[in-house]
Length: 154
Image 1 (cartoon, one colour):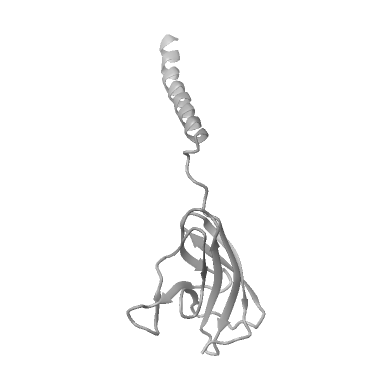
Image 2 (cartoon, rainbow, N blue to C red; image 1 turned 135 degrees about the horizontal axis):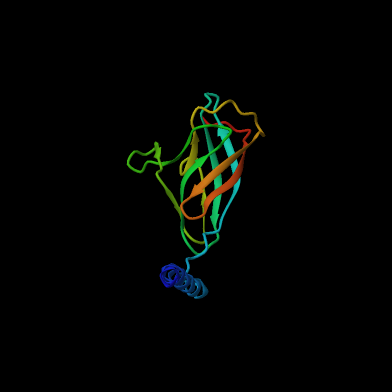
């Protein structure tokens, strides 16, 4: 009986100690920082007659920490990728692996800058609304909506 009590005392004591340490860690505010505050607005899609398309958003980081946009997709449109201007070859774009959104800053996506390239999208009607997911390193998924513009790209 004494062996049984001793055998259970060690794991229970270890759990109690771990719980006490974790409680102290969180009570001091040291248990991590809040996720960055990301706000996405102004979503628009421009589609050419040749069916290529791009989505543009305004991304505001109103938090105190930088965050990184790693991917953007639309369940309705299929394959997409982040693109940015290629500094080595003016007038061309390349795949953007990640895009950092600094704390207290705004990224306005544009044709000549960072944007979401939509690969082989279906024909979209002007005014059509499409849902998107923007994926960030710290914040995670942020839902957004883009409206098919009446304009077309060349």
